[in-house]
Length: 218
Image 1 (cartoon, rainbow, N blue to C red):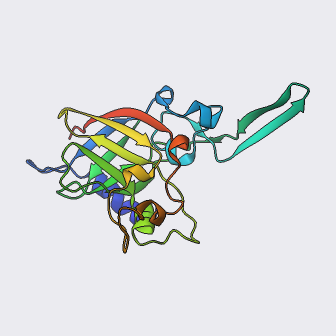
Image 2 (cartoon, helix red, strand yellow):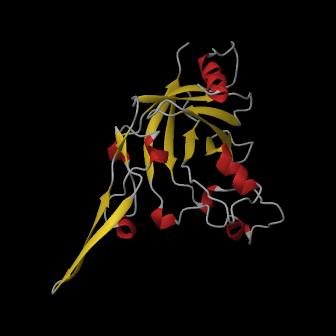
Image 3 (cartoon, one colour):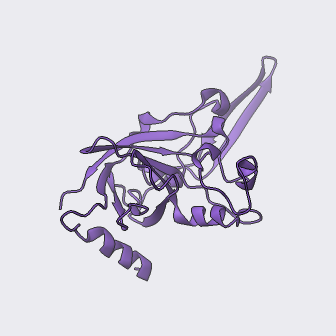
């Protein structure tokens, strides 16, 4: 096991101290039928990518989407075909755990293969109604403008509702420009979307899944 994985495993297994404000949540894998997408833009339901499969209750995902078309007297008829890859160790839930007192940095488990990723809070630090979390490598690339000429693996963002207390609704959705609120180096509001380059998914191509989390029992 890699050193980083060992450290993250230890962090996830550590109990919270009494009075600790850090969130330590167990989240249900999002139901497949909670999928929301723009039918007009997609044509048919999009396949599950490995980036979404880590949060969705599925045993398989797709790494490639091909379109097959037939043209006849009636016109052109196309169908999308997704390949299938199987999850190594699928689980029905995943852990979402803060490792900072201000809940600005989280460790998130992968329910598909039992790996981990770090997620950082990207909305206003003073917000106490929801946390918008982005995978830290993707955040670094965007924040430091390392997105042109560099391969960017788009990870979904996590939107955690923190207003209910005992239950935490969670939305897993494609990253769109509307969810980026920080200023980029040398940019202003008018040039913000241009500064993001190709990182965001177009709004009509965004997809989302919904689930809920609860405080993890010690």
